[in-house]
Amino acid sequence: MSNMSAVSDVSAVPTVVVPDSVRFKAACPDCRARFELAAAAFRLVIGATSRTTFYSFTCPECGASVRKPAGERIVELLTGGGVRTLRLHTGP
Image (tube, rainbow, N blue to C red; front, side, top):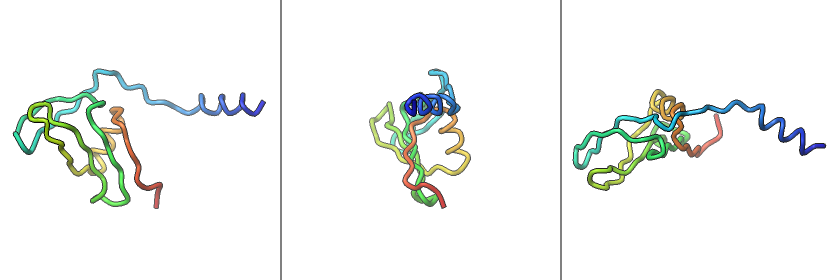
């Protein structure tokens, strides 16, 4: 019986359904190309400080690995858009 309640607890957790068509504008600092990428192309890392909170992607034009700082608003937009997120800390 405890397994049944665990399953119902999991199903009660709200899920954000994000369409596959969600895209974000980005730019490469190396080749200066501007483009749109799907949420799956990004990785968001949330650290304990603003210095350890960033997002990354690979430039589709030149192949460079790009890493940029992510402020609160960027974190909100990327997480709301379904970007994979890695949390390096669990809270204050």
